[in-house]
Amino acid sequence: MTSRRFPTSARRAAAATAMGALLAAGALAAPAEAAGGLDRQALRRTLEAVHDAGMFGMYSEVRDGSRTWRGAAGVADVDTGRPVRPDLVHRIGSITKTFVSVAILQQAGRGAVELDAPVGRYLPDLVPGERGQRITVRMLLNHTSHIADYILPAFPSLGEGSTRSLDDNRFRRFAPEDLARMGLAAPPTGEPGAAPGSYSNTNYVLAGLLLEKVTGQDAEDYVTREVIRKAGLRHTSFPRTPHIPGPHSKAYESWYGFIDPPRDYSVYDPSWASTAGAVTSTMDDLNRFYRALLRGELVGPAQLAEMQKTVPVLAGGGRIEYGLGIYALDLPCGRFWGHDGGVFGMATQSLSSPDGARQISFGVNRTKYQTVDENGHLVPHAIDYAQVDHLLVALCGDAGAAAAKAATAPFLPFPADRGPLGGS
Image (tube, rainbow, N blue to C red):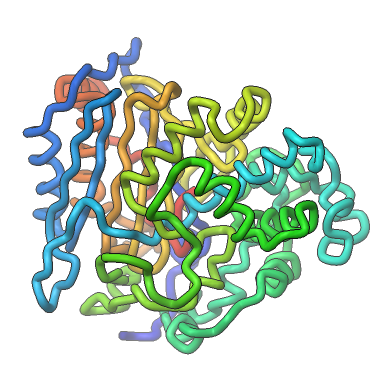
């Protein structure tokens, strides 16, 4: 692996974590309706196309009402050829943020947290003075606090195109307070509350610490009991060791060609991701979780409405409509809600229709396979476009996907880059 300097714009995109809706102008005048039923042949074909385009392994679950399709294509281990399966446990990165936001909204529903109260009321030692009075709980959850991300301060070599600091700290235990201080010590990205917001993992580390303050409990324990178990999820957890709990794939990181061949990062201490991205889950559990959330089983109607109030947020080179731990993505067949996430070597996407009836969750085991051009811009890979095809078929149906592609310019529902804790 070389250590040459990473281009500035790509370095910034890698440090930001995000998924942005990049639907081009000139979209359909009237959205196509999502097709009823599941075209299993089209889903299988588009899933295998992602593997054929160069993804080592991908697993996906698509739901339409009571009907479910599950599929997997490729390998979980490139050395042994062990195949991937639809039920593998996966590091879901920033999808963790939805779980944490639900926990905060539960406390808001009980009157223990005020969304528009200053963070300094709850965390006066960490966010003191004027800054603590200007930044609200809501600003943490919708990324308008403009507190900088802690990823580069925690792993400074990533800004130079080297994973040396990641390798050196693979088994280091990071305290969430230290992660928060790293982000708070960096120059802010703007004025508190200013639009557009700026995606930052530090926000959700602070949200976890705030949750601990108001509940008197460890944040991960609270989320496990009051969110994960309440949603009936059996394969979702905050790992307590560097290993992914349960059957899983390896996690291959390319870092834009700086790591060649890709290196396995499936084993590391997850504390660096904390309440911003440490959860592991399965695709079935993710669909169950978002279905329960959108159907009002985890928070009350008022709290769900607050979660779905969106603001524009800049993330990973894109612009997204972000709520409180959840974002809206407008596809040609309608609006979908969800989140995505990426850690080193693994990326995940989960989207649901507003009623939770039409859903997709998928995971992949190779990240940052794209290249960087001479101007430092990330160049989308054939894998990215193949993933879009699968997503469109899953949510819009085969006919809807074909109509969408014929009537719109090419688009990616997430940027080519998925940085550490990727996702929006």
